Image (cartoon, rainbow, N blue to C red; front, side, top):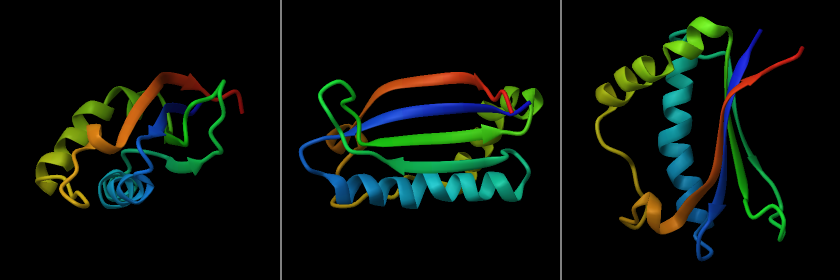
Length: 112
């Protein structure tokens, strides 16, 4: 069965443009490459309305076809990151300046 990882991200201080730029030009690029190489099954970036009990704006989901892909995720993404070089940033803001990962879920197993 498929396995996913999920990050729940809060955009800081109205920096939506910087956050979307960062995920579009870094996170998405790496996942597109990972799909081409067969390292992942799929990925999604979802935007949700933030509320008091759920203080996040974005959910990032990376899905692996099976346990083997999941177990090699660090190695495979490490290879892609190394080949890519540095991160692409908007307005020279570092990730900590525009987003905060509220929580992360690893090893999410799909029932169907």
